[in-house]
Length: 364
Image 1 (cartoon, helix red, strand yellow):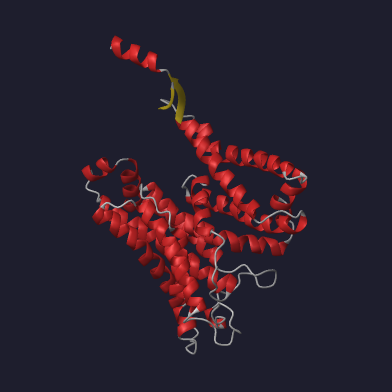
Image 2 (cartoon, one colour):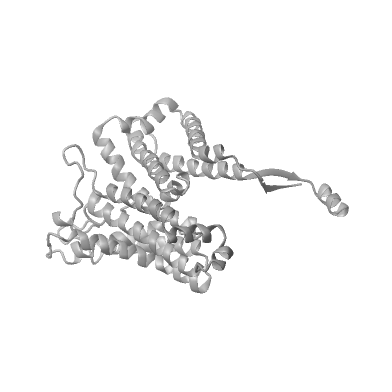
């Protein structure tokens, strides 16, 4: 006996649309069970994670700060995934974007023109795109699996950042702490509403990217190419579309947005480079992309939900005394249930007995 998946001849539009909501509800139930097993009150724990962060204006600003990189990265990843190119290394592209964008305020610290922020953002996008070009090159010209190459490059980027802030870029006035100089005020992203909180323009960049990608996918030839090649590479080649060109475009595009997220995070929320500048935004953005159904506006909503798990997880550590790993557990459960729901919606599970299969073969 073995288990097979048989694709359903008819797909339910209702369940396809409701799948993220079902997955989120199942995550809440599983999370409540987890907290009960830890000896915590499930109602209090879920309230601390999902409700309390929405009660204060300043925490809404913090929510926007955490959602901005998730949305930016996930919007770029949606282009990759819809074109059937599996970029798993956005975390590394995020880090390299932060490093490239920090060259001007760190290496050329004495040079502080009023327009410094613009080249910083551009260099951040270039850094992320160049790092994404490595798996793009290997896949397009050597048929190398981009999942493995992009993922392995993440760890190189993390180690490179650690070496920089402990070595050549370490702040000479920082009492030997592993961090760079604080960016000059002209190199810091301005706040959107400085009177009520510290949410910066990175969140605006994320919303603009979502709207731009939504327009591209619906109204441009490039969006049509992405959809066709993602559904059938053979059909795309028949229409004259280049699958190799799409590899380059999708990887560089997603890398540039991840790099923009990196320099926005460093110049907006942190103000300097440190050994760790991300709690795993690049990996969490994969969950955001799928939870948002690879739709830019769905990604905005999903990014806010996942950002809430980061913010609420920090609050839960203080209010109910749980580990910071609770956040990762919630995110993992959410991805598991999203993929599980999609699988059960698209496929029917069948139990196949070897004797029955042999009898069907003889009858044929």
